[in-house]
Length: 468
Image 1 (tube, rainbow, N blue to C red):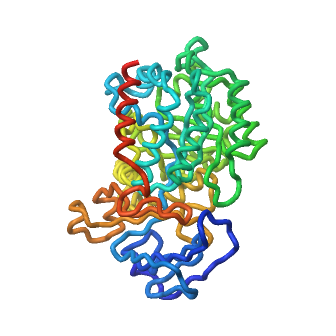
Image 2: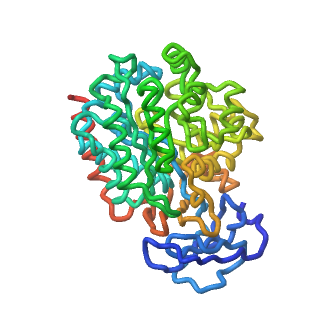
Image 3: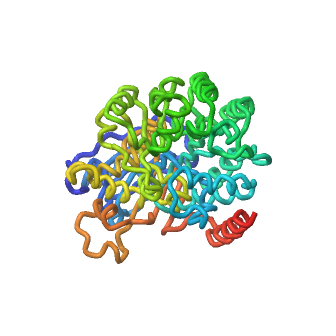
């Protein structure tokens, strides 16, 4: 809680970090509560960086140009979504996919997704990013693996939309090379040759990957899953990631069906297969990570391999419970993701925090799954999964990615602990969001953005996709 903090000023910091805007100094002052008690007096931002954190009752030692009075706001680091499929916002609550588990769910949707077009990628990306931003999310990773003919530039389209909205992104060049004819799950129209995949991966890294601190866009390589790519592509992707020092991502150990597939196809459990192809490293983060045995959890932790927990998707598809605390104790970074909007039907990070809290208490003791713990997964944990040490906390030198929530809705009436109330009472929208020192959400609305028009475009495109 904000009032538990010592009453001294923690140091100020300036290091000439490149900024996206002017070097105006902004004091976000005296928040109602924070995730880090050292920030009880707020934070000072210069350019795109946090340059001071203030204890309760303290004031900046250098003049500021602007003060935002946060006495009615809970102050959090910007939430970080470490797994998503933006395009799936076009197939929410899709009739043919209802009440199915993963493999049958995918088979019902692959033929629909094979008909995606460029405008659909543009609009669905905007929808997903806008939803995330309004929920306090400042950094989003997307796993796009569908490149049917005519959609070869899907990642380029996504990058342009992220820049338009001012959201930080880690976009992964996904891939599928193992179609139904070769024993895989996806239809042939959705798979590409390994040469095309690897050539485009190199192009995207060269064009968009920013390795420096404060990067707004990064690229990772992400073969879709063991049941949709070849062993040779898994190996080649790992080699390419090593060459260019980028991260690796895939789905793993999501369902028992996947385990059975890997044993039948490769003669190995999913994690053994992952190790065989050179993926059991700290360069990798995995989506879901549900069905690991105790030995596998230890191996993942020893390797430093990250796990993105996707609670809503895991529940909707009846996939199972991720052993989050066991993985964390073993040494694996644990982050949080909303996963695809067709297996969640939403892109809301603060709601996903609550889902992680409630689902976690079905597996672990109430004293272990706390509101602070699940918020840490959505911030520092996700940052570690993405390989970022400049995001995820309110500390001097960190990027000025900030989410501010008010507790003025009926759902919060009578709440005691403001920080706990965000999770327990079900916060769903941020009042203010800052990305890289720029206000992107003010009074619960995205700055200079026409949401009504976006909704109408999305509805029309969803109808078109369903009718094709």
